[in-house]
Length: 245
Image (tube, rainbow, N blue to C red; front, top):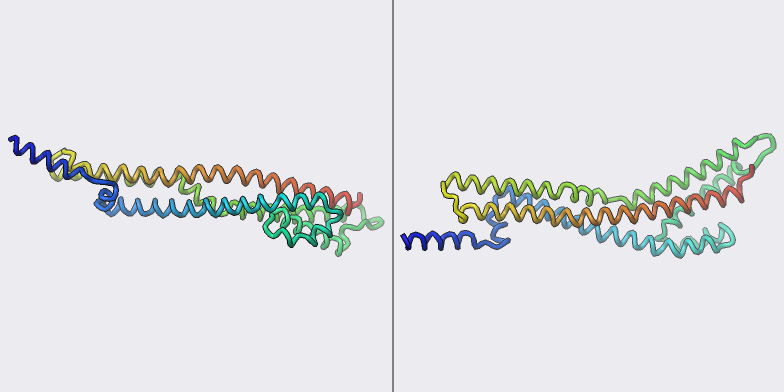
């Protein structure tokens, strides 16, 4: 009996001596596919995180000098002539859209006050400028928010995908118990191990994605306020200097 106990003990020791890689390679195809999907999602999220951080940092660095130029310049024409020196600034692109729309309004005489025409024509011209600024603001925000859905999707679904792998691994462990009729650690350890790995990988993919998503949303909201405020300032300057009535 002692020999049998020793053999059983040795068998258990050999059976449960699995590291993470052994557990992954010995996992069922369904669990391996789940882990592969989670790894792909995690790698994609990190690529989005680094690209989005670079994009936002570049915009912030470029908007500061252009904002200084805008408030120190003597005329809108001077700003437009220097806009080529600020290719990465979202404020510069917003100014360019407003400036070009303002020139179109001036060329079409919508901004000029004609005797007997009333204020309707002038308000139509001002509304065109407002729409051009809003459209460009929306386009800039859409560019900033692009690919954030990847982070949101991974953050919300990653734990559940990992949980699916966990449930599948535990099901496999119970099936082995039923097939062997032995509830020893050597029988259930591989299934439990792959199940816990699926949970860990799911959380490892979801947590950074959720944190990064909330961080970028916060920064984009600040940039939205900056763009909206700049558009309102530009519209007020144009209204005071180029629109009458």
